[in-house]
Image (tube, rainbow, N blue to C red):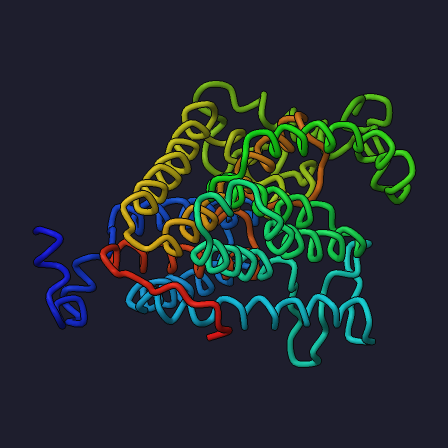
Length: 385
């Protein structure tokens, strides 16, 4: 079907046309990854649906419906919601810091206790940030995106939540937010000289930040990453057990439900941060590579969707959404192999958890909306709505 046929008045408004425009390959891959996570949660609970697998299945079913519904939403509504959504999420982050509603869990004050529900705004701010940056860059010229005093605006959009969330302290979320913002600015056309300067500055600031800017337990995580065997029963325990699980799976794995590290509970956080170690133990090198290929296919298909969008807002937004998905995969993968400190970043769609899944599925809803409405044009607008 040609572009002209797809852009005739009313053509894309028909529900059947929109449903046909969804990239079902991407939907299928998302289901395979999430289904693998549910299967692993069932396995590590001793072949039981409780306490993780059933909850995750219900969550995924609900969010799959939400994702497909969002795929049918025209990009103009995402465009209008970008700045207000970012503002609301920033208010929630500030409420954690400056109101009694902030709730501490796992050593970090990064939850908002609303009484009837607890939410983690750091997860959702990634969505608001990507959409707000995409809308801002939609209104800028290529020269302004490359290097201009106006770049102080996107820098502030990224820097303020980064600082607030790092202060909670939630270094994992702060790292993803900072890198996602940097990725969006890079894809929007930021000058290579600025990128090189920032990279050098980041490398230079790491040692003093580790020594003087981190809490003691965070500093211990970094030192443990460098030498986990120095404290095998304390701070080095997690990563040592993860490496044992990775290695014991061999080429084909020990078999479904037969992973000793996870079944005997030697592996910590086996349903969340270290679930990929369980996959490697039970399904070996082959199973691990299969899941990594699924992740790679999701990333490549999403980037293809972004590249074909006519709207600059959709191009930048879709690329930004898949950027933080890819960062989750890279950081968690490096973490479980001992190539990065343990910072609490989940393996996307595979790990147990509601906030992370909701964020990712809404992000994929936007990517699919970009695919369905790939020929949509959005006007430049400096207004809030």
